[in-house]
Length: 289
Image (cartoon, rainbow, N blue to C red):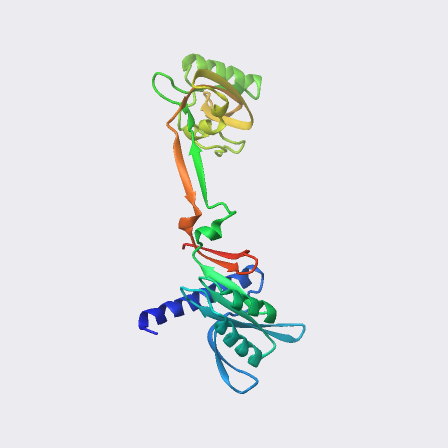
């Protein structure tokens, strides 16, 4: 085997190791370590090189899992299955798994099924792998937005309630001097009883409240919004005071922008799948990092 093929084979083994480590972690076996390139003596006394290996104890019994990795461009033959079964049989009391990227010849598949070898495919998904699955999603976005221009501005009228007759009197005097006293500018934020902001600035808050999807293009549309425990802070002649805001009346226009399309293609994001050869079930998906 030349250096390039050897390097690819090692990378494939390490990929297999990381995939099974991730599967065990997902299944709650966080303390089990999946090892790479382990030497294990069989019952015959012969040492066997195992590509990927892990073991765990259950009810006092040690269970061993052995994986043979074949980064082949062609289907694995019956000979490969027989050779690996001999290793599994010699070690004994273990589960044998074969992993390859292309497939298995019919004789190898029949032999493995009879003797309990699990056959897996680990590869970037092919078109055949995607059959019956959603590979891409096309999303058409039609933005319908409130308009905010000099010709068609968004306006917001506040409905306020003084807390007492005295505050109402002070408010009336202040409004007579400055009718714009309770106008809400884009940077305005509603306050709570403690005087701290409870909303975003109106420039961001208002668009989130408007039901523009229910409105055809045009306008003006009017939308009342009730508020609870919202206040504004104004100077009424005796220092800054909180005045309760019962609600707002927003007037706005609506416009539909150009349609855009977003395509989510899993073929570009999925780097590898682990698939059971017999059932075709996907057992793990590795996304591009």
